Length: 189
Ligand code: GLY
Image (cartoon, rainbow, N blue to C red; front, side, top):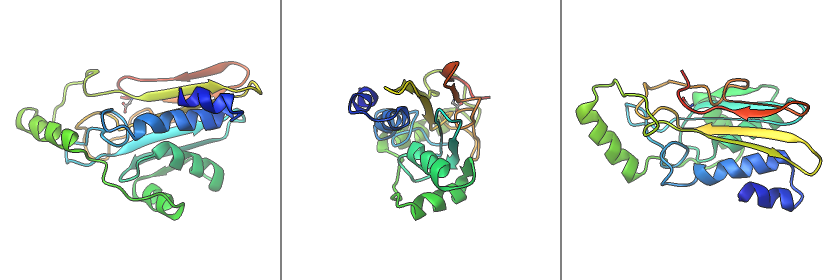
């Protein structure tokens, strides 16, 4: 709905896929993305995201902590740097320099789920849709331009430092104005 409203206002496909990813990123009840996402096995919420436009421009962040909107940081990587991907503390420092706020993303619900997981799982979490999901967005605008985004907190209770498919252009998401676009979900490994 947020993406469609953006398109109807005359926004670009790129604006639409950014805004659509930002909705679940800010939703504490969505436990696989952004704020409210399940932490890794050490209790840290670490985020991966990417964005790509119709010209083949792309930006990605991986292993980003304490920033609610990794998709918007990915867009800044695309628009403001000569690079495609920034990771970890470097991505965080870049986000702060771009005016993003440092925030605690671990909700009480996610912290309690992690405490519960620690009692039983011995650091070998099973893979299933209850501990794993991704938000992928594709849009086509009034100029017939296609853009895409993908954002996730990754595999719940993953090893610290683990990065999945979602932020990788061509794995988590790809768009091509002549052919179309696709996003992937499921187990990034
Ligand atoms: N597909 C999301 C992930 O594995 O992190």
